[in-house]
Length: 218
Image (cartoon, rainbow, N blue to C red):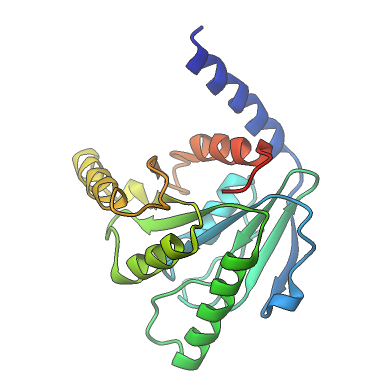
């Protein structure tokens, strides 16, 4: 077994152990003073409204209703924290890019998200969820620019890949990869997922297991 295969095998075992354990809703916050104690490494999930954040989180932790899903974009109006005891905190950020939400609410969300991203030392990485059907949109680029400026490490995760043909997915991956090269804070590897078919879920679990075991942020 090569060194790369050994590392993959090790991470697979760590991921299986990590995601076989409990994961419970910790709290939802609407202001910085409500944040939980920074006692665990955190992985944040961000993306446009209706990109599939809740479905992906539920798939990762093998639950059906831990993170509430809705057909109404813009429903999540707070930062939701999910605790994996002694290991990791999953952080569901409010969706962005839905025009029907009042501008005052959007401004409040934006400020809260920016303050969280800039001030959270235990944040290991932000996962930027991108709908595979549509690719990177203007709202995603705005967040990417903010993350670059704040030097917050982020990684692209394609969602709903089951909606594309294999050639279509390959083209989308190439398109997103090309754009990521322009962004200094972007991680080069892209994870392609389908919460419905469970595609890419094991790969993403290995990624989070590796981040959970790190002693440094970034």
